[in-house]
Image 1 (tube, helix red, strand yellow):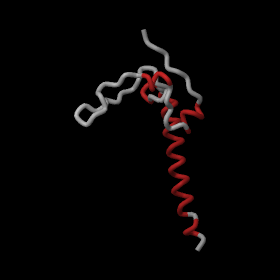
Image 2 (image 1 turned 45 degrees about the vertical axis):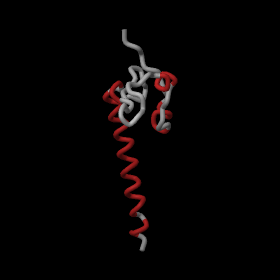
Image 3 (image 1 turned 180 degrees about the vertical axis):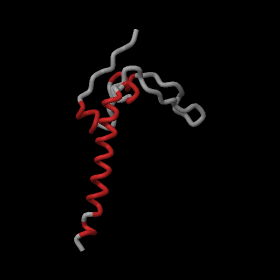
Length: 84
């Protein structure tokens, strides 16, 4: 039986970079956190921050938003050079 993912708002998915839910925080990860036996970080089954469970349309939306952010930073950083 598949567990449905916990829903997070679009705002939280975009701006809350931690996106820690109770299920993610309480998950028992493999390893003990030492140098010889480090934690093996994996996606929790119903983690809403897991991009592998997002729809293809939603993933493309996130890629488009991130691309526009990078493009606007590049334009804004060169705006002052055109004024001199």
